[in-house]
Image 1 (cartoon, rainbow, N blue to C red):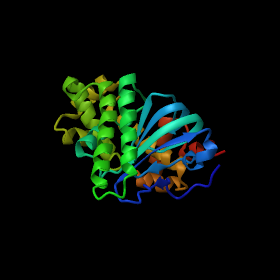
Image 2 (cartoon, rainbow, N blue to C red; image 1 turned 180 degrees about the horizontal axis):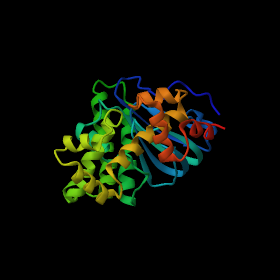
Image 3 (spheres, rainbow, N blue to C red; image 1 turned 135 degrees about the horizontal axis):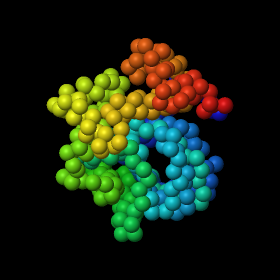
Image 4 (tube, one colour; image 1 turned 45 degrees about the horizontal axis):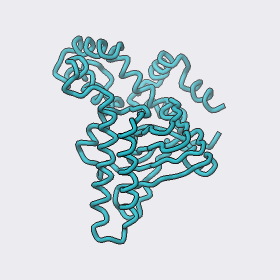
Length: 285
């Protein structure tokens, strides 16, 4: 087991020309060639992968995915991830920071998070792959006076192409039922406020609906209550910190908005069947 840090490691963008963008293509026979990504971490930017050849095994927030050619992946800055294995892989990788990202695309990315690896049909894969190649060529023209703008614009176009594929495989907002629309709004609020807002009533008030109606909508759309979603989101963050940092359980409870450490421990055990300390020990034997 690698030594844990006080907080979950965050990789920053290696952006020598201050563009808010990094992009490239890497060829790996195995993970020994790229050990830096084998350690669990977050990125301080929005990360995208396009699997061109071979296979990659990646863990994102305790879920493991085996990614094959013609798949794209989006990883939000909040998500903890690491590569588990690589076999004769060619992967296009690009990252874009929040400041550089088109506002509309940022909103859409927040809406679809968390995502799963996305299979691209032949035409979509071809267009995205060609756009990556163009962006890489633009990134190499840093000697030109107008270098930054074309690179930023082309990478935003690349993000839009990937987002549009995610949206094509999910319901558009105008096709959502009332229940689904309210659930989507609730989940957006939850993501922004789960550390400070724990009561279904508070979310219902923000959405200007009754708590009973919010519960009815969320349960019909997902099969689970509002409280369930709140607890699951809190526990996911707790798992991240227990696994990837050496903060005490009490510190984690406080950071997640629970002054009553004993209550937090009971809640965690109720959701996961083990105590926070047992979860940490089990995953770091």
